[in-house]
Length: 282
Ligand code: 13P
Image 1 (tube, helix red, strand yellow):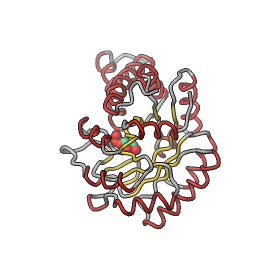
Image 2 (tube, helix red, strand yellow):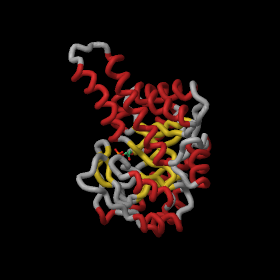
Image 3 (cartoon, rainbow, N blue to C red):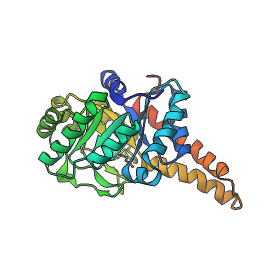
């Protein structure tokens, strides 16, 4: 069933596990993620970035996720990932998205507070949770370039930010990056512990593709309640498609190769749900 992220993140915070948030690009990826959630009795978040939304439209992704969610009896949320403007956040709200991120992390501290507070205020009457970001996650998500090491989230600022914006969850910058890593990523986990001491709302880890499972688990032990995975799902889907087309280059029915892409994504999502500790929590 379609649900907001409010209750699922609260339960994750109380239960010391994280809900997996998976970026989807097409119908097969939506089906893969929701089927994995149903089979594993896990709450789940499906999310779309602005470039994905531009590619297919908010209404198309919402309709796909709603249809998939209605077939299962675990909570399924549809989240706007890295909403880059107040206007896009409001469009997602109107379309029916059950969770919204406003990413003002590229603006100044005060401007980030301003836009995040406006979105939180606008979503509050319909009880749609709002995630914001403070500090800069590295790498390149969508068309946005990420930050460098000196742009990690400051714990004191994070406390002030949460209070002044009224957002319901906070993405923190502790050394992860969107996309794949060249070497092994080194996260500032002590910083996460400090943030957790000051910030009461659920904390979100972006850029989890390529982060070793043990590191993700440790970040969850230290207070992360939502973990975002995008690149690895895109790779899994493409690997499935490529395998079919390499073996049988004459294939022309998209169901044949997209179906295998779907299987690959489903398998990966199950592995990530194990890492998050959300299996059996729905
Ligand atoms: P990855 O592509 O590194 O998994 O990042 C996902 C993410 O944080 C989406 O917001």
